[in-house]
Length: 351
Ligand SMILES: [Zn+2]
Image (cartoon, rainbow, N blue to C red; front, side):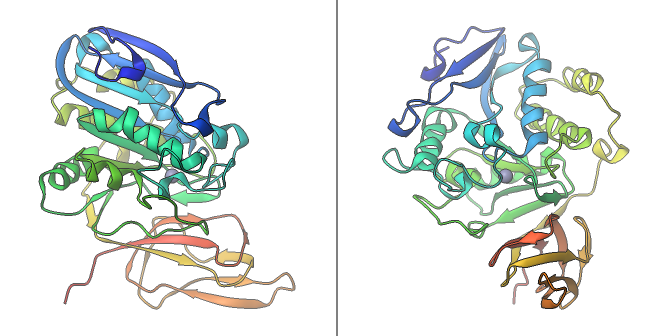
């Protein structure tokens, strides 16, 4: 099987570890990136999974590492290609949100540009060397180093075949919240938009590949519950795609997990579908005092935090523009002017 040329020939029934050099002049001197191919004994779909578009989202990165060491090629149909960290410069430097080489948020510049900045060349390579060659794509994220988060999945909204398949994958993944969005997530975190201006899942869907972006964990730590949610979510999607039979793999990954995940990680949770993602920013730089936690439900008009100056005076009251749930929250006190404070998931009010 030679469907992913950059990985060379893949042998059915085998796991292989690769160290790859992505194409692109800006990437020529990069440290090689680890990729793991798990090629099933039987033929079937090809699933591509990566983490580390944001290099400080550690539960997602650990989930991909965990999958690479637990999925058994003899027991799967098709192939899973796993890349633990695409944005390796950010991982090495512990840089949140962006790639430190060009200060661009890679998840705002999909599908990238082969002649663009470092991040644009990196996302271009990811899309063209892997994503477009796959039958399905999962991009794993979480809260970044200064963010707390409740687990959720994002996919593109729409009635076309790719969007419908993406939404099915999003529901199957099994996290408490599913966000289906028809417009791109707001260009946030104070950085310029680049070529394409899309997030990974949206760019992949544009190319005809059913895809989701799943988020769990945050605050710059490996949280076992979040790792387990992401590992099990990928396994559930594999089962949905017919790549594994019931009970073949999931029990294996669960026994490998070092701590016992909470009950909610495995029980059938009612999934709430949200259609609006509202991001809140501070106007002023200063100290951020949130009055809410990730996962809290908030009302429209509710005061959910304040931003103060270094004398202790309040500069700004932060009020929720919608009724919804706090999906992610900046938990570090220092905020810059126009700094991102939180994302609230809500249901679109249709009139
Ligand atoms: Zn992320």
